[in-house]
Amino acid sequence: MTSEHVDVLIVGAGLSGIGAACHLQDECPDKTYAILESRDVIGGTWDLFRYPGVRSDSDMFTLGYRFRPWKDSQAIADGPAIRSYIRDTAREYGVEERIRFHHRVVSADWSSEDARWTVTAQRSDTGETVRLTCPWLSVCSGYYRYDEGFRPQFPGEGRFEGELIHPQHWPEDFDATGQRIVVIGSGATAVTLVPSLAPEAEHVTMMQRTPSYILSLPGRDPLAQLLRDKLPAKVAYPIVRWKNVLLSTLLYQFSRRRPAAARKLIRRLTAKQLPAGFDVDTHFNPPYDPWDQRLCLVPDGDLFRSLRRGEASIVTDRIATFTEKGIELESGEHLDADVIVTATGLNLLPMGGMTLCLDGVPVDLSETVSYKGMMISGVPNFSMVIGYTNASWTLKADLVNGYVCRLLNHLDAEGYVSATPVAPPEGADLPFLDLASGYVQRSLAQLPKQGRRKPWRLHQNYLRDMQLMRRGPLDDEGMTFQRSTAAAATDRAVA
Ligand SMILES: Cc1cc2nc3c(=O)[nH]c(=O)nc-3n(C[C@H](O)[C@H](O)[C@H](O)COP(=O)(O)OP(=O)(O)OC[C@H]3O[C@@H](n4cnc5c(N)ncnc54)[C@H](O)[C@@H]3O)c2cc1C
Image (cartoon, helix red, strand yellow):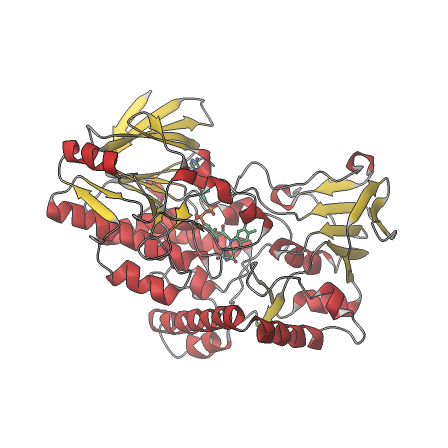
């Protein structure tokens, strides 16, 4: 058993954890820190997912860090390019050597007496248990289970004689050539897989129960292309980034305020890209409003191109049963398949599965209230990064990681030992994530609630949140600060 002390402990070496480390180095250069990562590589999501065509579905000028330009004019990037961007950032900022790979954090226990966390990790390579202590714990573990995607049990699936694949565990040697492939699902993964598999496959069928809203976006950003040769990246990047922040905010606000008009607009843009006579109203007309669930973006309309070429088709129906040769639908139709891909989503997992205890008492996340979407009531010196669901993840991750540095500097300047959020006096009843998507709804009960006003409510609006997080006061109504360990214990008792 080893034990070591650092000022800040970061859990996870994905986009958020590497970002957190870079912020610390820039904004709190005197702090010592370490990153504990359960896998043996940097990159998180962008290393784990290896299915054909894996890519971002939000633009890289906002999915990239604010502090490090995305230099390509490719707006929608593939998995390997994003992985390289994260690794290069870690290398450039000297973060790599602070990462302890194979360390899966299982628990963190706050001691009021010492005003510090004791974090326990299990080493996946040696089986050893490792303990570190730190005054501040920053959890950047993403939001879903790494070992297993969401996979409903389908009737009769044991009968299927072909290959059954979940995109989270894509077989390295898979060859689509000449195969009849059915992709179950209608989310970002399904709409990425279909056009990627279609050119080699005999045919790809996207089998969906409920359609999604799908918008085509230019794969290359025209403004980025224009500015690329004229301005240095450090000048061009913020311009393109802000253009994209404003456009995506406008689209989101328009969709929420004028859902009928947004629905009509998306339908018109979709119909324009489909072959004549295509049944748009069955296959591209979701029963919910735009942005009740995440909108899918496809670069240069690649999904629509596959449909136009006849390489792919869409079926909107329900599965009656798997058969030896494919899927029988409730309508009676049979989809013949050599391969079935279950693009059925993720299993949400708050805090990478770790448990939190305060002086030995377990924290039940569902009983807590989130503060500025990044800390939780009653829990001192703790932050977590859960990015936006209606815009690029990194926009919020950057805000949270910057805010943590502001708080750390404030604690030092004022001689405090801890910062502990309190719940709003009137209580809180809003969900932490405002999305109707299955993976969110399945897991809301495990997450903190949000209050109805700031600072207990984040608006999922970068412009408003930026004001709150970069310029808003640190000592607002929702936060308490403790000067000594004794005061910390008393304050927590009333929180
Ligand atoms: C297929 C897919 C496509 C996506 N596309 C987009 C997109 O286009 N735009 C967008 O904004 N978002 C997208 N997302 C959301 C995406 O997860 C974020 O973009 C971003 O990668 C999250 O970064 P993260 O570092 O917070 O989490 P992750 O990328 O999940 O990384 C978390 C890291 O923490 C580690 N970890 C977890 N638990 C523990 C533990 N207990 N102990 C130690 N280490 C732990 C993991 O191994 C991992 O390395 C997508 C997600 C998926 C699954």
